[in-house]
Image 1 (cartoon, rainbow, N blue to C red):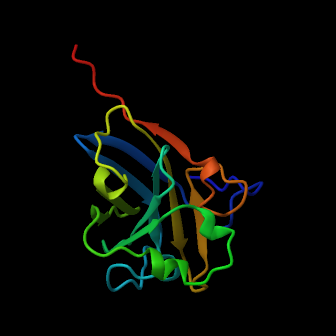
Image 2 (cartoon, rainbow, N blue to C red; image 1 turned 60 degrees about the horizontal axis):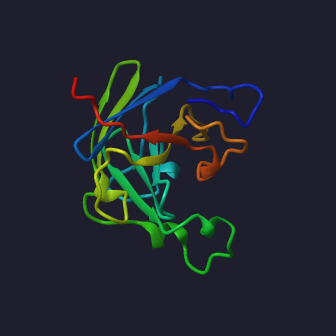
Image 3 (cartoon, rainbow, N blue to C red; image 1 turned 90 degrees about the vertical axis):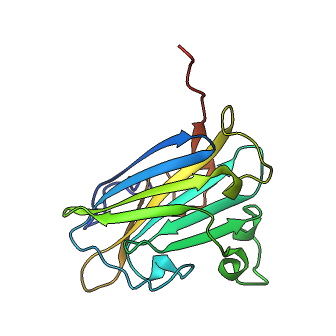
Amino acid sequence: MQQAWQASPSVGFAPATVRVGWRDDTLLVFASMTDTDVRTDVTGHNQRFWELGDTCEIFLRPVDQAAYVEFHVSPNNYRLQLRFEDDTWMSAEPTVDPFAASVRAGELFRSHTWNTGAGWSVLAGIPSTSVCDTVRPLAGSTWLASFSRYDVTGASGVPVISSTSPHAAPAFHRQQEWAHLTFVAASSE
């Protein structure tokens, strides 16, 4: 992860890596975050994780649809599930709380977290049906993706944020900077 919107990393910036793969119709995400002070005040699913401590964020959108998801995982393995119909909510005057309107109940994806001694890790399995408007196989499709982090260390409670995307500003919903993930079927050879 990086902080591309600034010339040098913030004080307290800690490395993190994300790897992705897929099997059948599930995207697999493995994030490993260096962290000297793993902390969260999250006590249940679908809370405002980014305000409550360390958070791993996953943003996904098939290139041929407007709707996208934002999934969070806390170090104690609670999940936040958001679905936005498009990205116009960012530039419009809100008539409702975008967070409240976007929260999704149920189990849209699964995750497992663990403390590594040098930080914490997340393994998430995200079915394509939790991201796509229509049921379709992953093979041959392309999604936009970004992975971000809130890292709260020390008494200040102020997070150091970072992302896999080369954002020009610290705004993780900027889809023009998300990466393309193309699901290529394994060769039969």
